[in-house]
Length: 339
Ligand code: UFG
Image (cartoon, rainbow, N blue to C red; front, side, top):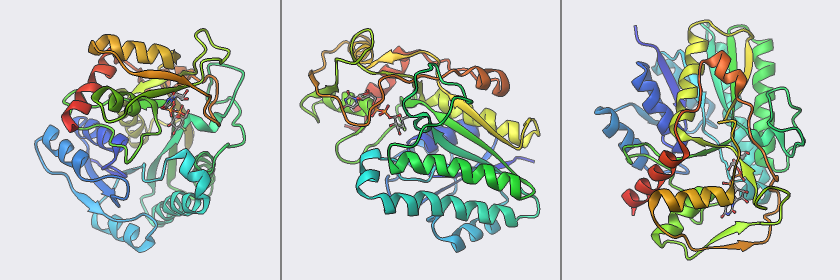
């Protein structure tokens, strides 16, 4: 019998790509989303890619009764929890909104999970932000976490700890946290991708919106960092590669391959790229010129961070495969698709 994976936040950028890869791998997927930060564009794109309609339950994970009801309605074998707010700046301005939404929704999910007699496999969508500024690069899963620099980052650390402690205390709950580096890209079909509301905070949507003329000019934040070209270094991970890491992690849980009941994996390429290199590669692969200027450093940015993905390569049998050129061609195709 097919196994069912619940994807909370499944109508969003990462959730929609994960839904496609899970379905391609033979899982049934139930999407649950409160649609607070997205419309149905990606959901419709997912259905088009797969050639069928998937269940979409519009609900809020902060509503404990609704979470219980969801688990009564569907027979769920594993959950991937994406449903959360994710804007760093907004979290500084509205910390309580972030703590309430990101923590309560996850606690509700775990409360429901612990009541099930068959237990539950829970995959938490975490972030490399938990490492903060670190001297020792690349970072491994055992690199120490630094105090979070934003309420958003703090919710990622806290949810990791909530999962770790719940796994320890409640029989039948198993957990994996995937720490993403910088997810970018769009599906090669150009039917799903990133849909930021308002002015994008992240680099790649800002680039594509500038290229298409929605924004006048990209500001490159800082060109005086202690890096080879003076701009920050990041580990940009293609969204389809990232989605496939989730499929590997879910299979590991469902097939009883976990070595510990709570595991953490870095999901990155292992190769740093500077902001300037990314901009140049985007121009080259799409044969266009981008209007950009150097601007002061953005507060809160770390100079450089990239993953050591060895553990995920070995244990999950997963490796980043897509070339940055293909990723940057895909984001441009997506921007033109939604224009
Ligand atoms: N940048 C610019 N101009 C822009 C936007 C970004 O120069 O308009 C630069 C940033 O200064 C940074 C790099 O591009 O050097 C990447 O910035 P992003 O905002 O795209 O990504 P971050 O590295 O700041 O953050 C991302 C995710 C976070 C996550 C973090 C973990 O957005 O959610 O990675 O490392 F927590």
